[in-house]
Structures are given as C-alpha cells and as structure tokens.
Image 1: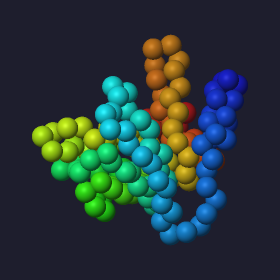
Image 2: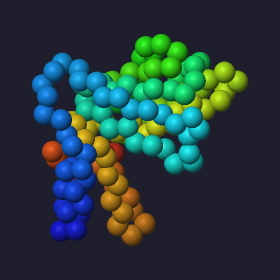
Image 3: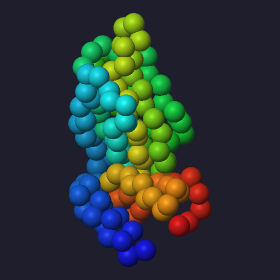
Image 4: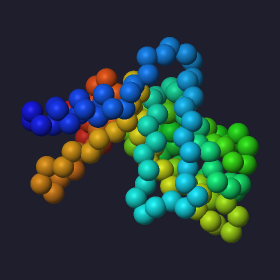
Amino acid sequence: MRLLCLVIAALATLSGASAGAQALPVEKVSATTAPSAVSVDLPVSAGQASYVSLAGPVRDIVVGDPSIADVSVVNDRTLVVLGKRPGVTSLLAFGAGGRALADRQVVVSENGGGGVTVYRGATASNYACAAQCTRLGQGAP
C-alpha cells in the first residue's frame, strides 16, 4: 500500500498538474507519423482541451467512448480533444488510404494530470491522476 502511494505521488508530481483557471486551457501534443503497437497516453482534465498535431491530413477519426472525450477537427492536421468526464478511452486518426496517423489513449482526470496502472499479481487497476487519483471502471479503491 505504501509503495502504491509513493508511485501515485511520484506520477502526480511528474505530470505537472496546471493551476490555471482559464475556461479551456489548451496543451500541444504532437503525434508521431507511425503509431507504435502501444498507445501513447494523452492526459486531459475534464472540461479542458488539448490539441494533437498530425503528420498528415486526417480523413477519419474514431473515439472509443464519446462520453469520456470528444474530438473536433481544427484543420486537416490538427485535432482538439475535450475531456468530458474522468475515464480512459482511445483516439484513432486515419489519413488517405486508411493510413494510421494517431493511436492515443486519452486519460481524462478530474483536475489535470495523467494516468497510472497499478498491477497486483495478474490484476490491473487503472487510475486517472492529478492532485488525487480516481480509480476507473470499478468502485472506490
């Protein structure tokens, strides 16, 4: 339990939660030209937005759970991701011919930050973290 607290505290410190009180702060996040097999996390606070720059013109966008995050197209190479409620979902962007431009795991937390997965044996528990961590998918930890 103590190790879990230390890991969560370290991640919250490294995530650098912002203290700004603007309506929709926007954070720049660049996508790679070819997504790797493992999704790259995109931390977003509920009620805030981040933008993703793509390596090519986007044709199609898929959001795994639109109740967690929403995506708007600014232009053919820029997406804005709006966090709606705490949770984790996926964001996929495709260009001409179905070429993958982005494969991101969107982690929406209540007050900024990112996410952490805690493994206990074969069981994994996901948390959206900022100043405090919120367990995702199940009841309170």
